[in-house]
Image (tube, rainbow, N blue to C red):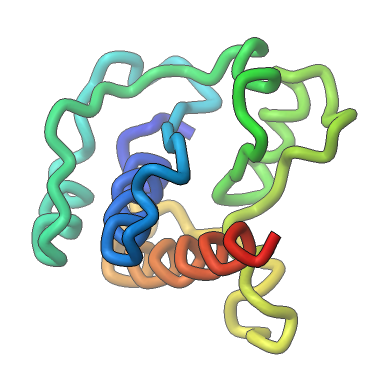
Length: 149
């Protein structure tokens, strides 16, 4: 929503996981907000600390808002929850190329604990551990899916 918690965590976790698999050069990864309320702000300190606990650097990030042009620029656009997807549909005027998905939709349907649900916003829940774990599982599943294509 604001590009200071979940989405930058996902950006840096995805990059980290891709790097560990030797796949850094295969992906262009960026994060953006569906609102402009945090524009220009850095990653929220508890989210930064959670990434640092896992050895993931996140320096230099500043929140930005997604634009309609991002739809044409990126092959896949991943939201964290249903509210994000509704906002993305509004910003893009729909999803004619079926690029939008929830992060945890990339887990297998057999993983009912994660599949088909959103990542809870730790800004509200204060649970950065669960957010990190859910995002890491979703990013790993997304990389697996993309590499299988």
